[in-house]
Length: 110
Image 1 (cartoon, rainbow, N blue to C red):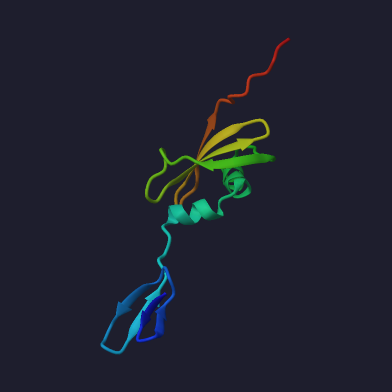
Image 2: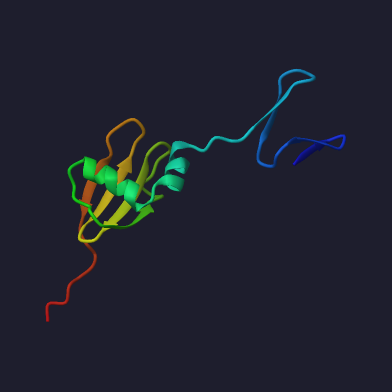
């Protein structure tokens, strides 16, 4: 907390902005769209975007953010479904871009 003469002005993490000598506003930093997506995009949400684009992912197993492919306003997720894998690019106010990937799991043919 930021204190001034024994009084608390802002909670830790808030940004204090003085507009006049007597007015002080405390605001919390707003996460970027990518950070917000990272916090709120479990496998079910990413799988729903996948299905909206016509791909089948009825049983999502996990979704992992791909930081190397992600950009400032484009979160890229690697989505593992029961039988398929996808790369899903989430772009605000646009349809998701979905790419089917090869499954890394190899079946034993014995």
